[in-house]
Each structure stands twice: as C-alpha cells, then as structure tokens.
Amino acid sequence: MTDYKVNFRELKAKVGIDDVAYSLGYRLDRKAGVGRYIEMVLGDGKEKKDTLIICHPQDKAAQRYFRRDGSKGDVVTLIRENLNSFHVTGKD
Image 1 (cartoon, rainbow, N blue to C red):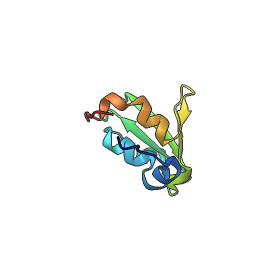
Image 2 (cartoon, one colour):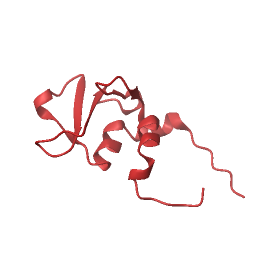
Image 3 (cartoon, rainbow, N blue to C red):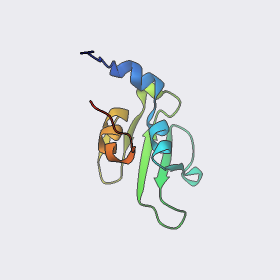
C-alpha cells in the first residue's frame, strides 16, 4: 500500500485561498478595493451568498481569510469546509 504524505506548507505556497475560491465560484469584488486585502463574493451581482476577505493576496503561503460572521482560516480550512463542492471522488 502506498503511503501518501502531504506537506501542507508546500501546498499552501502553490495553491492560495483565491485559487480555491475561484474554483468554488467566488468572484473578485473590485468595488471593495484591491490592496492588502481582497474580497471575494459568492453569488450573482444582486444577492451575495458569502463573502471571503483574504489578506496577503500576493503571497499564497501567507494567505488567510475571514468572514464577517467571525469564521476564519487558511487554504486547508477552506478546502475542508467545501469538500462536497469539488465533485471529485476517490478511494482514499
């Protein structure tokens, strides 16, 4: 049996919260500004279902997110929260 080891530091340096958010259907909210923080919104232009505020958008390894309801995390947390949204199945 093959033992797969995941180095999460390397993963975080390659895949950012913004990358995962785009694949989940979020879009960049330019009205909120682009700088030290970016906002990504899920939903159409009229109705926002969710908003992620991402700090350090230029440094994928240092990216963190938070929501206005107080929840927060890193890319691994965001992936874990949305596992059922990726439509990928596998054995392990």
